[in-house]
Amino acid sequence: MGKIASVCVFCGSSPGGDPAYRVAAEALGRAIANRGHRLVYGGAKVGLMGALADAALDAGGEVVGVMPAALADKEIAHNGLSRLEIVASMHERKARMAELADGFIALPGGVGTLEEIFEIWTWGQLGFHAKPAGFLNALGYFNALRNFVDHAVGEAFLQAPHRDMIIFREDAGPMLDALDAYVPPVVEKWIGRPEL
Image 1 (cartoon, rainbow, N blue to C red):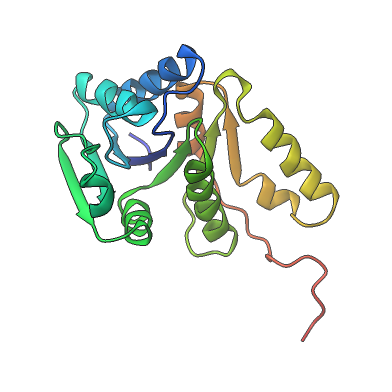
Image 2 (cartoon, helix red, strand yellow):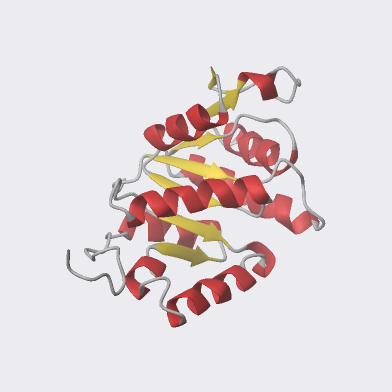
């Protein structure tokens, strides 16, 4: 096994509009389990989150969910996990998931998924961690986002090495390979910052 032992996956609590999104979530869950990695995720039994966790569990994997009490009280918590940790807030959830993981993957999802993976990417850019992160681009879901990130580089709001910190792959196996091979860049965060 490589340097990645625990993978945190951010994804939708909705299933999405195409069954292929569920297929991608299930394939990722199986791939994580089959490599002997632990899956860390948001702890829900619904949407892509539930599909991901169920596939990893069915493949014999260890699955740890982290969920704020307010969401657990809405009865969306997955009761069949290896471990479910209940925390007080969304902030605590994200911090705990980051602590438990060696790498991060975003499956298709909405605002919460994007907020979670972007925060991890920001922390990496600022040098708070050196863990890899990527978008599993099922059905080209993140194509427009990838184009926007390139645009941000072209407009000098993002440096190319920081863009390259975020991995885009279409399938679970290549994504996990890329996480394991990741080498963080050594580059100053600021663009055009005058010397103080």
